[in-house]
Amino acid sequence: MSQEFPEVQGGGSLIIAWQAKNKHILVVGGGEVAAGRILHALNADAHVTVVCPAAGLTAEVAHRVAQGQVRHVDRAFAPQDLDTADMVLCAIDDPAASTRVWQLCQAKRIPANIADVPPECDFYFGSMHRDGPLQVMVSTNGNGPRLASLVRKKIAAALPANMGAAIENVGLLRRKLRETAPLVEEGPKRMKWMSGVCESWSLEDLVEMDERDMDALLAFYASGEIPPLKEIRAKAPGN
Image 1: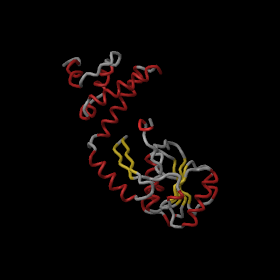
Image 2: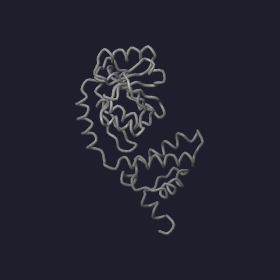
Image 3: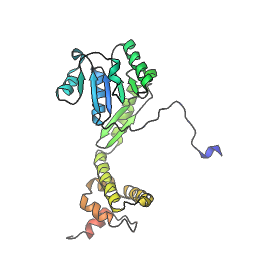
Image 4: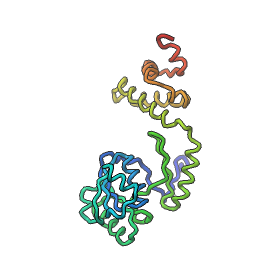
């Protein structure tokens, strides 16, 4: 009976996509590692505060400050910096100070990542591939960041170059479908129909699809049909 279900494999992480938009992320430090953390947070539309003496900022972090992309506190970390933080990313070359940040975050139940100290992390940063809305993360659970980078490069090389554009079009089609069939009870049918589109249309068709094609395709939703892109365009007015 137990063979019917997946086997539990302990020791992993719960990999999720955290919605950081408009959240307050505190970055402690301003070096090269901090610069990478800051970019990840900004890409997620978070509000970022960097606590670090100005002399410790790299050229990239100083640029973010000068452009107003992040808020800068020109001093070393202080406990009150946690008062408005939803998440803390610590990247300083001071083990004792890093551990103190970790302990304070634990006491306040604020999720934190202490760079290069896996035992003092609520979460890890993986190696990321980004193509528009597509994000692929590879994690080794803190065991081998360099290996994660190698795996990520192999995965990225195997993906079509236009995958991001196809996903953007599918997202727009999905939003249009919700407007066409907004009722909650339509949920299962919407999911099945969208799955059918993604499975029956080629990646090239999904990339090429424009809004006129989407509107024509949506006209078939009620019947459950999913005609090919060529057929939809052949039936379009003027063709």
